[in-house]
Image 1 (tube, rainbow, N blue to C red):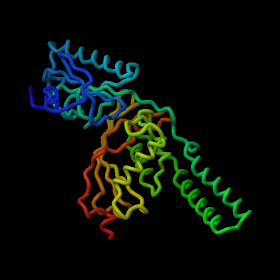
Image 2 (image 1 turned 90 degrees about the vertical axis):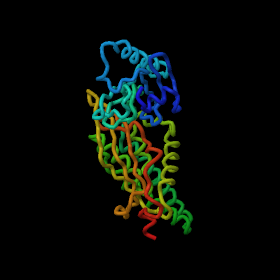
Image 3 (image 1 turned 45 degrees about the vertical axis):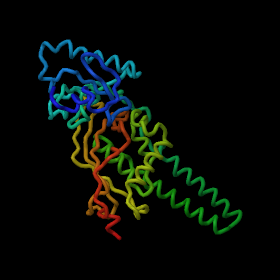
Image 4 (image 1 turned 120 degrees about the horizontal axis):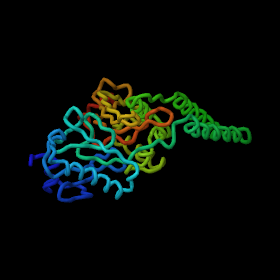
Length: 325
């Protein structure tokens, strides 16, 4: 057997979270899941690519499909899941053991094998009404502060009123534009633009996720979603940049659609900068692989609202905020 990542997993030279094993194949969870359920199924027989299979492999290939169905039922997604087979480097194959993936297949898609991914849906589409509850709440507080001024004109009440007006104006400014996502790449750009604001527009980000994107291992509600991103941003920001916005540049996007163009696999490079210091080295560079789903409004929604946990970071002392000192 060729010395590949998958052969090492089969030989127990590399640990893996194995969910199924028999005489013909082995299944394990992907270490970089692109869906709530993301499982790779690989045959024990070394087949570098699907095109290397012959008529003698008919039973083996059928066994892989039946195993995928059995695992999907065990995971509770038997009525809605995707299977993807990648064949060759041009189709996204990166491990030349027998390769096939699930979800919407894409160039440079996640590590290959036969993949089971829960089908994503869009249960809540973006709307202005879904976002405007926050500035309206601030306006209500401002009105209450104004009443307090009328009843008891103190300096504190004036300051509260001014702060309320400023915050209400800020949130109205960042929510009045409509996030157009006619392509998967636009969906990524709109999502990260919300994150880059001085006060991130977490509510819009939440509304730009599919059902799968809102059921991440790191969050399962809007409150835990906010907490996740607050922590990620605190790790990403360099010292002294708390009052500056961030800019996320999305480049080198590759996207491959499913047959009816309702889902797609996306691979792009994301660079993070402190706004005003874009000519300096980026804070971090992320190799982002994601799936996207088209909603009933014709717009695209992300199936994963997280950035990769690891990114190539600029050398210490070279970020824009640090160079400004």
